[in-house]
Length: 253
Ligand SMILES: [Zn+2]
Image 1 (cartoon, rainbow, N blue to C red):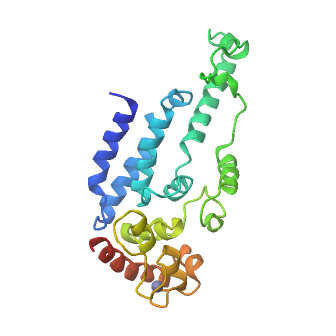
Image 2: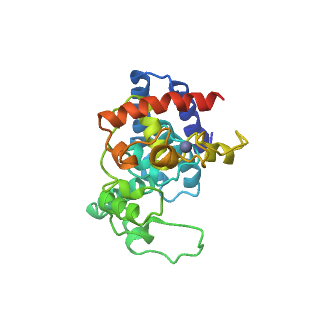
C-alpha cells in the first residue's frame, strides 16, 4: 500500500461522519481524528525529503477540508489556518530540525559524518536533509508565509497561528463561515463554474458571488459584511443560521 493510499483510507473513514446534518459529537470526532492524523505518523521527518511528499500532502489537504468544512476549490494556504493545524511542510521541517539536534548531541552516532562532512550532490533530484540545516520557528515562519500569500480575504486573519473565531460553532455554521472567508461556496458564480447550473445570477439580478451575498445583495446582506461575520458574534451567527437554510436549498436545486 502506498502512503497516499494509506492516508486516503483514513480520510474515507472520516468522511461519513461529515455532513451538513452531522451533530457536534460527530464533528468533534472528525476534528480529533484529523488532528491526531497530523500529529502522529504523517508528520514524522521520514516524509520530509521523500519524493512522494506531494502525494501525502494531497491527502492531508483533504483531511483539513473535512475539518474546516471547505470545498475542493479552496485556496490551499487557507486550509491550515481554518483547521488550526500548522502547515505540514513546516511541521516536517521542525521534525527534521529535532533529528539534526539529536545527531549533534550524540557525537558517537555513525550518521554524524554524513551530516557535517557532506558528500557532493550528484543528483539534483535528491534533497538530502543536510541541504537545509537552519532551524525554523514554525509559528514565525507560518506568519511570514501567510503575509506573503496572495489569497482572498487574507487581511482578516492577523495571526494565522491562533484558533479562529467561530471554531466552536456547530458544523453547518462553521462550514458556511469558512466558505464566506474563502469565497468558495454554493453561490451562483461558483456553481456556474462547476457546471452545476446555467446561471450565475442572484435573484436580485446581479452576479451572485459569496461576497455579493454577504456584502451587497439587497436580499441578504449583513451590516459590516465579512468583518462582522468573522468576529462570530451573536447576530452574525444568527445570520449564518438563516444563510445555512438558503445554502442547503441551493445545493438541493
Ligand atoms: Zn443579490
